[in-house]
Image (cartoon, rainbow, N blue to C red; front, side):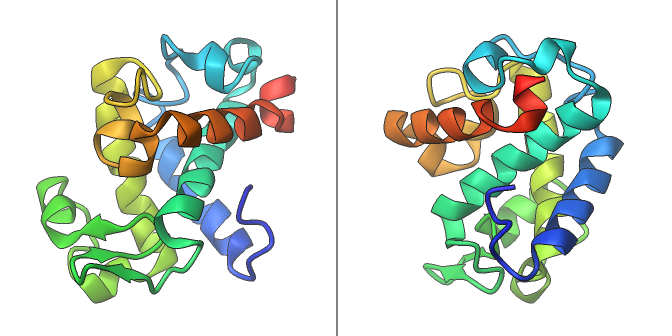
Length: 162
């Protein structure tokens, strides 16, 4: 994953993989309309590789959201790896709802997976033109340069190249 250089990487990856598996119906079992941009080998990939793709996307977004800092707090209202607000966590009925809860890398990722499962399931795409799928909740994904960087990175990973 893109955060593999961080000491907590294995814990974060494992927690995110477990969470993604809970939402296979909206994530790994589906083929988003724009998947060729993000992961050329996704359609023929195993469920494990498809799950890894979604965790890879989260790991790449975390670079822009928090610089891989699980304790990050943006503007005093966005927390953790994925910079989730307490309001958003409550709206999605995440277990982690307080700022301190959202500063747990694993809990933050569990909440993030719940969010992307809803948005990707609803839109049928990873990001569309930057206002659909994952981009609905993560601002960096609305920027073409960021989307291109993340797509280039995910597209080169073993889980996307078959």
